[in-house]
Image 1 (cartoon, each protein chain N blue to C red):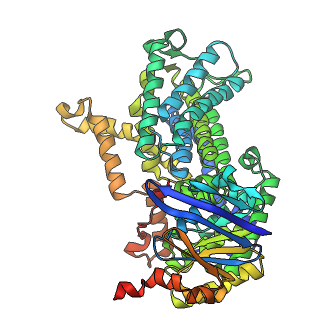
Image 2: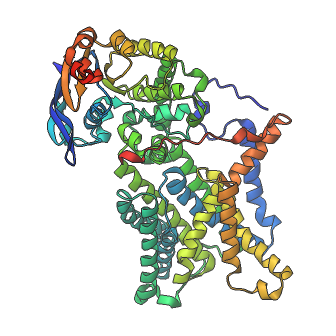
Image 3: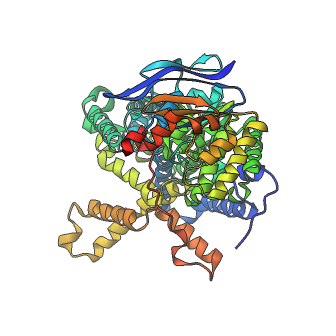
Length: 257
Length: 358
């Protein structure tokens, strides 16, 4: 059964159809990539899945739950976490604090317990910390633990955002252009991490990505969109050889002539 | 420079960074405890005012400094707390009951003000809270049967469990105890998930939300807690002055309260105390200054607001991190001596802002 099902999703901004009747399914344990030229509506699809936008029509099912009845803040509790294309970190705080926010959906202590900092709160805090440390170890963030996020290099900030989403221990992870702004070496590292996230942590990954090398290295399936519509779906190789996709990126032969 | 080696997760959780820091705070605590022996009646009374302002500062700091919600109407919460306390204690309600009641009524007002905060941000929220401040001030003037209108209300000294605290030092210890309690509760909140949620909302609402933090719940909570703390300060304030009237809770007071946290240093609990100290001492300095100014200038009614305004502008321009930020710089200078460099505290400005989706 598919973990994430998107059915006939559309989004209109005024008279513009940013996303037009998009459907796809992502199975448990898959790495699924959405590609497309700028303005194709990829991030809009993500924003609809993460409920930041309400879709004009269509349905999103996650693990048997209809997401249209949910609020954005419910998603991590259900097991869906995301990162942002432009980094959205809590930039005045340390890396550790940022990652701990990722544990928010797992906090069970009540307000009065936190106000008095009861032993239960302390135990819970230490559990959160242990979970965070695992992510720190996975992503090699040990050196940055106590640094203020705003001062760190862009590549590290991207990684912290990924780490923060991982701290929520989601079942599915939405990555919006994880490699943008990274150099070649960092992108290579990223491809290993994405595979580790799937293979070691068992997290399904849906990502938007432009770097075709990364896409073909890690993706099980690729969805190509352009002008809000689905162009093709298939393996990375199939997509690269698809004529419609090439036309969307490069234009048709007639355009040249 | 001292390096701290960490060997347990508890080290990042506990209240004091290490034993030396703890020693300093204990020393400060001892000084505060023996302060009534060191200070005369007048200065002890000023110290009580510092504590009251510090409590308000803590409340406002939680809201503006940590949750990023600006409030230009905080004097209204102070007023709600003060008037509730005055009305209840006039009807013979004991202090141990009336104080929580004052906090509860103020918290309820905070809840109501928090509702528009879910939709408004920045300058619009400032205007909404400003309007709330006006509404409360006018209500206090007009609702004469309860508030006594512009005539105000008189209060008796606090009677705590049968003991009347009519001496300066008695009230000082009461204020000190309540300040310590407030500080401890806030400190606990800030090192637990709720505090992190507040800070997350301040720094990026959109990603706070996608990490599972309900904006409505936490913004309202910040307003409620902040208002309750301010109500507590209000109740103390009423007993301290033993007379309250609407003009003590005007818009200018709200701005003074905001100055406490801006001058103290946004986003730090220390800032609330430094700001409160500064704001209590400033009128004293102005009074001393008056003696040296030509009389045509010294007795202008606008002198104090002008100086307040000028200081606020200077702080915003020259030291946005406030007194606490300045203190951190001085401390670092000594720790790193002689290696401190001029631009050490400079931070890269971030131009990626998260307002576009909200």
